[in-house]
Image: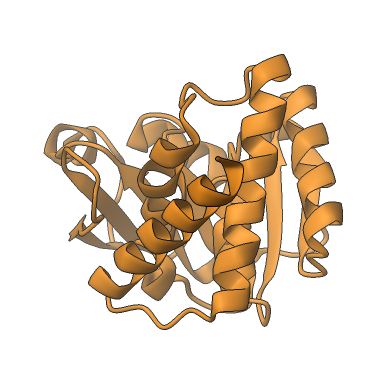
Length: 215
């Protein structure tokens, strides 16, 4: 049964990736499936994600994370409020040439992330257990990405000290963001709202791209 399920998961992921017009090797797809297998096992004991069905993790975690792959800028990427490593780990698997820092204040989730990074052999991922406002890295990031983290105005305020002046804040959202945009201080910044296409996932998904740092 497990072998049959694994084949179903492989076909489901491959189909979703093809529908998104992404070119991702079978080796990388296998690594992503190994990640959600590990997440599924840990989730039973540590409640890392509300998604309990491993099959459902493919669209809701993997494909959703991959939907912003094309919008990453630069080489230093920060995933704020990464939780169990989303979207950071799937993106790091697909982009081994980029350096990812995964940030969360929750100890059990960061322990899982570190275990996943070790088991998957990801050399381009560093996990940090800190609140975002307390995080003081020695460099700034080219892209700061968030997924289901906070209201847009709060994201902008909390990450302003981490984003390069020429960098991009990439906020993943599950609904229209016009009210949040209106409530945010985004003067003199370029803002683009993109509707993401996530196969096999019900409901709308958006990415808000905000260029430049708050002055």
